[in-house]
Length: 293
Image (cartoon, rainbow, N blue to C red; front, side, top):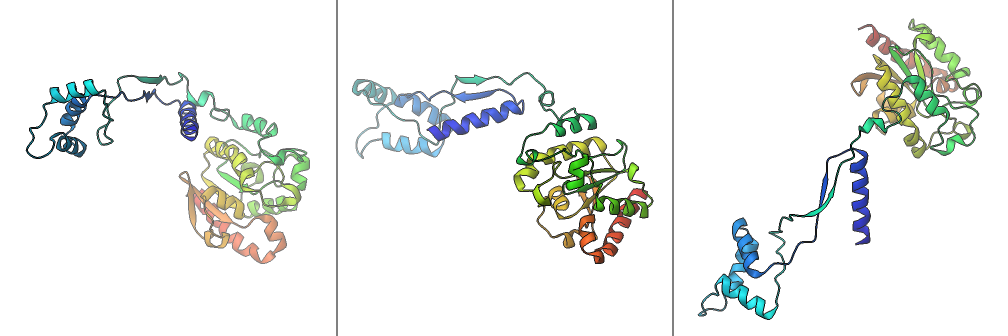
């Protein structure tokens, strides 16, 4: 019973958060006399009623008791008949929980947030452990009318010091990549999956991504770019909700909520393995073609 109450409380909290309609929690079903059960069972014509009628007919050779006689006999003996599972009564009364009269998005801090609002919320965020050692959160930067959004994994050491995305060596390489497809950095919105630097530049943990990715989703909702460029495995896996390898996701045009999405290597990976620069060039040219369509 304790577990059932806990689940009910959780369900009601969820409905309250979603501003759903009223909820009627049935009161305990009343016990009924045999005659009442027979009347309801007869209306429903279910198997439970048939079985009940068969039992009420009595042994062979004895006349079946009339409903009134059975009801009288039950009243005299004090016996009570439980409701059959196949034909539960419809309660007329119960606990009525009215829906909260409010707009769901009025209580969502991101529901009506602008890019500037999201940035301010990110800088004050303490939802996960990454906030503990950061120097600066890195919300992202770029124009509100950017047609291309570049999404990386997370800030590095230089980004943590400056509060800006992709400004270290990997950032310099990203600027060169964008220039190669005739896109100045200032025309692109650049951000990451997580907004604070993971210690030692490790891959963000699942709970850290879950705590932070709603900021990115809101940014993409506001920007509505023409193309998204996911750089690195973490960005691709998160936005596409997949466990496929980066190699399997390349050379294809995916979609994120209807927006074309291209997957390629992270610039930091290119610094470690220059052989991946040619495949990256192929990927960003696909993004450029999508922008030109």
